[in-house]
Structure formats: C-alpha cells, structure tokens
Length: 91
Image 1 (cartoon, rainbow, N blue to C red):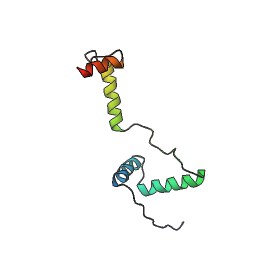
Image 2: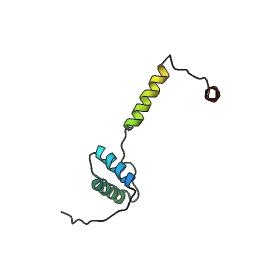
Image 3: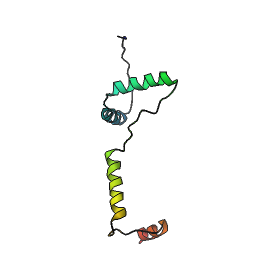
Image 4: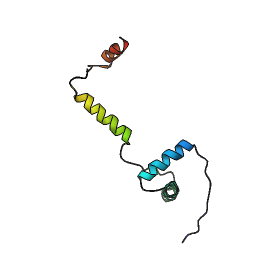
C-alpha cells in the first residue's frame, strides 16, 4: 500500500459545503474527490473537467417542470414576442 500524507486547503466554507453535497451524490467524500482530481490531472497532464454530475439538480428539474406546465396551461397568458410581454409588465 502506498504511504499517505495529509495536507490542508483553505477554501470558502460554502464552496466546501456544496462540493461535499455534490460528491456525496456521486458516491464519494471530498478527500476521495480530490484524489480523483489529482490522479486524473496526472493522467491527462493538466486540468481534467470531465468528471461531473450529468443530471440537473432538484431546483432545475422543478423549474423545468413548472415551465412545461405553464407552456401547456390554456389559462396562462401567452405573449407573441418580448416587447408585448414588457409592455404588459410596465402596466
């Protein structure tokens, strides 16, 4: 087994929280994710950015469903162009 070492990283606490949540959805903790990142970096000789969650988050899914519902709801006012919608907003 390879020897291990510890290192410390300073980061924004909200970024850490969001990253931990993301990587948890991918089935790993932040330490494992950092090790994956470093190993991929060595493998490709640079920054790897292909490791990502391929699905929208809950908030985006909810917004997409709401947009779909609004688009098909005959009781919702529809506009033919942006100018018409802006005129309505200015009333």
